[in-house]
Length: 265
Image (cartoon, rainbow, N blue to C red; front, side, top):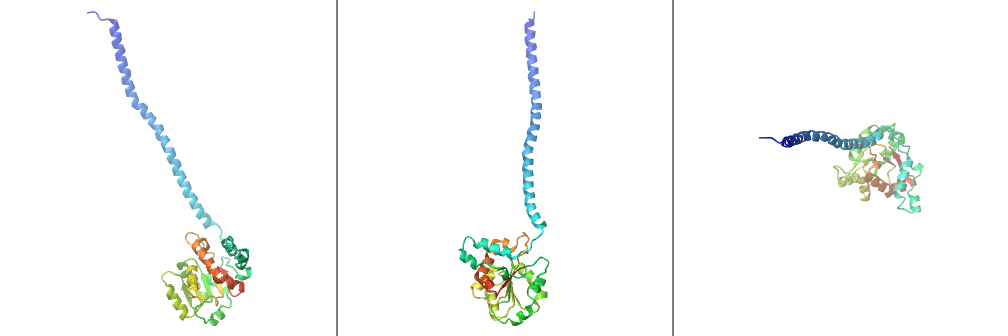
C-alpha cells in the first residue's frame, strides 16, 4: 500500500500545531504570573501614600501641642483684658457704651510676671491685707474674689494661698458638689474674707442676691494657668463669656470708680 507523502506532511503539520498549542497553554500561566507582580507593586503604592498622609496629619497635630509646650510663656498684661473686652463688645455696643466699658491701666494691680507663687503674688499686691481682713465684718460679701476655670483649679489655689491667708476664712464658690442654696446660707450667716471659684457660680450668686460686690476690693483672674489641653481660662468660650458677663454686671463700674482693683495671676 502506497502512502501519499502529502498525507505525511499534513499529519506532521497537525502534530506541530498541537505541540504549539500545548506550549502556548503551558506558557500562559507563566505570563500571568509575571503580570501579577507589577500589579501588586502598583497597588501597594497608593496605600503607602495614604499611610504617609495619615502619619503627616498626626505629626501636624503633635506639632501644635509641641509648639504650645515649648514656646516661652508670655504673662498676661492689662492690655490683654482690655483687647478682649473690645473684641467681645465691639460689634454689639455703641461708641458711648464702649467708653463706659473701658478699663484704664489704673484699674489694674501689677500682673504676675510668672516668677511668683500664688501666696507671694497676693502678698505683693495686698501689702495691707492684715488690716483689711481685720476690718471686714460684713456678711454676704468678700474682700477678695479669685476667678478660675474649674472647681479643681479652685481647690489648688486655695491650698497654694496658705502662706498668705493666715486665719482668714475662705469660701468655695463653684458648683461641683456644692448647692447654691448652701453657699447663700453660708454667706448670710458668716463673715468670709476670700471667695475662690468659677465665674458661672459667682455670677449666679450675684444675680440671686447671695453675694454683694460692694465690699470687694480685689478681683484676681487666674489668667496664665493652662489646663491639660494647654488652654487658659480665657481660651475656653464658656468661661470667657461668663467672666466677661460678671465683669459687666458691676465689676467694671466699681473698677472705674476706684473701689475694686483687677489682678492677672
